[in-house]
Length: 492
Image (cartoon, rainbow, N blue to C red; front, side, top):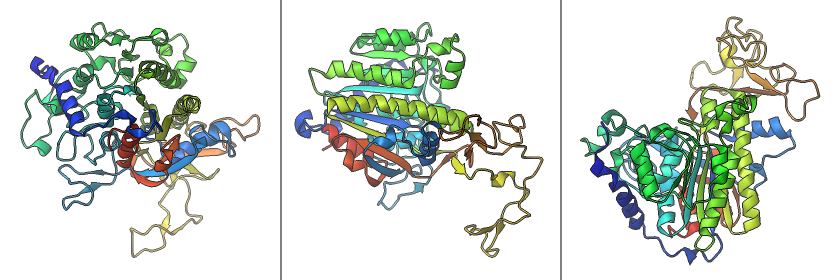
């Protein structure tokens, strides 16, 4: 059933109340050191994603744009179980592998929560987000993603939901309610069960909204957006997506532009199909550049701006174990990082943070010419036979051979057509001699995946600009809420 009409206006009220609950001091409390924050998130991007993209595009001695940032750290990403307390509390129950929703809540709201939760703690309590606080303090705000804008990472900044699947346009108890957390069904006027699209269209938390997911919004959402002064580039009423040209022409202070009914299209498809409708979608660097321009103009006579940018397709291609597109989407994300850095260097008062929500799929660089355990006729022998959990020392003997029924060569080379192939994908790098091709055994970059799911590995953090020293060393993902909030002067 559709969300009750009376529920629609409550989103802005709840969001505003949440923002007010965490008293935001005047913006000038940051002593003029930071005026803007650009927070870039490579979804699913672990350290190996960064390393492999560097080798692929710039060579062993090269660097991605993010790697040229002067401050480097790493952050822990674990979540907690439903109804858990926070770290240090007696009822704290960690979940070592996060999803994008709980991770987004950690850096947006500074609390650990359960997988699938957005803008609520592990016991279901609404918590304010740093974007809400920034908006409440007078900053211009923006949210950009190559995913549906209602998806977990962007939604974590401007919605509150018990379940990330409660996106819209229709309300269903199965996708929005969580009795394990609330004990009983919440009324449809409660923000936590209002579809995320409904919240976004009514709470005004982000001035600039760019990404995918037009099918999540309906005619009532379009009316609500226009009533708040948004230039709606993509019509939820007619389900007409916006294009690169529409974005380039946009000049309004508040812009809503969605360029696909679902997630945006991978760069490879757009490059190889220039006449396809999807090729009219803007790239992540283009959306980032336009968002900065719009927010900069809006904030030029006032405070500053806070912008979140997500490269979502790194994660989605990692889930699919698609190494070629994992690399290319990481490169596209890094190109967006360059846009942010170029602006920050000119501006002098902008903090840029680049990180990830979690690592996806156990992406690995393996030695050239080797093969994975999944290809072996039998697992490697465990030296400590009395302790099956101890696999730290294994025997690679002549008996450790490929199973011919499961391995016929590189998955993007000679074995590409074999659905049972678990072999590595191989890629030429910037250092390889001319004539070496992707998919060949001569290519020097050999990549493989551990699984199709997230892992619990720490993820890298890179920083540039004032206050960036705070991301160095080992931090927790919840620390990013305080780092961004303190830089903007909204959480001190």
